[in-house]
Length: 184
Image (cartoon, rainbow, N blue to C red; front, top):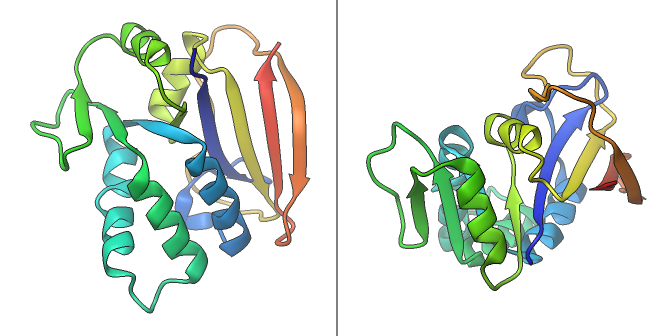
């Protein structure tokens, strides 16, 4: 059965706004992670941030982007399936994007049973719901050595505590720390 992996960047003060985080060593870390999956699961907002931005970078490879960002874009574009949970999108962009209108729990359980590499989700809203449903198998959190002072915070809507087991940690050249947790 495939694992559902949740990955997010946060600052030391808990900000998960993508405009406050990143850097080439973090992009390199995420490139490797994206190569380990064959399906993305997003909500509308995260989907619209990621697509068509990264596929366009992969296709055009503009000189303004770093080698790390182009490598990430190529890895992102190579993932075979994107499932977007949305009540407002009318149609999916791209051949490999599908809008899911059925229940989140049922759709994720179905995806986990499909063959292929693991499943990756990101953002805040859909992952918060997935946490509440206890469907996330692994958490990959990159803590960046930044105090953002403002921005969106990660605060999952879970009614009870979530106990995790640290299975790996890695300090990146940038000083960011990549933490990998599984459910207990």
